[in-house]
Length: 355
Image (cartoon, rainbow, N blue to C red; front, top):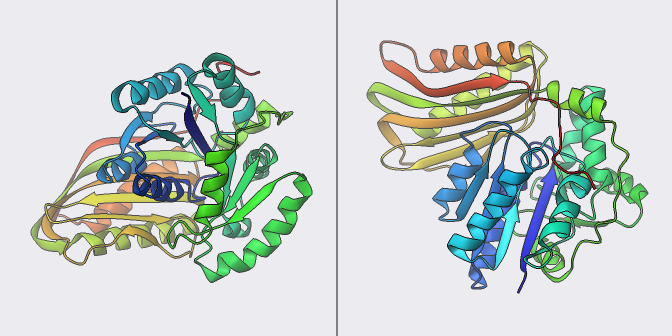
């Protein structure tokens, strides 16, 4: 019996993780065992921490996109299959990845058709992203993602602005021809069942073929600074972890805006002995999105994981994040210690297979 694999791509901040975690909950409610494969250019992912908190069987593929770490992705799928015998596997490629049909889907079908059944390729699209002013190379990357989609989910339809912008986005997407579009909100559940029934009951045609200019693709990825940091904050008095996360995102947004650095996404996961917080910022001056917002997260210490993807040079992004964290947690009332800190530009994509 083949295991359904649901691959959901789309640009950074499109709502892929929220969509897949909600999908996992709905599948579990149907009595199905679910596995999740997360993916990023770096390590220490907020997404993985959030998935594990949800008690999902999760394997992380780090250090590059699925296409460039194809053997690691295969290993992750096999590990989930062996350890948890899932009824469904969900997979989220890194948000700057495209050409998935040629580099992931067709290779998997060629090598593992007896083990895995691949659903139609879903691309998540944030209707509000059209307001952001990315470089042309990044816009090219986003356009290529949509061009190979078999299904598109218009996310964040619980937000009135996203509903309004979604009308224009839908008109633009219709130019791509035989494309099924699902407006939905993973937070409220509206529209989820129609998309979920589609990916569970149909298979990919695997026939989308892109003529990707890999030099532009590489330039688009390299235009983004990728930062992953984790650490511990200690204080002389108890403080609100929820407020700390909120102020961190607000201060980062203000500081990055001064440098005209466009935010692709910033995610923060903070843990105290009492509770966990998780919040995201996807746009300058945009609302903070909360997945976990407890009222009782007061403690004299917390641990945190921060992921930031910003159109900025790595040195600028790193110095901005360090400055904001130290301003938010000033000595001697606070002490901040990093357990990991990396900031880089991704290497040019070099897929293992391209069929």
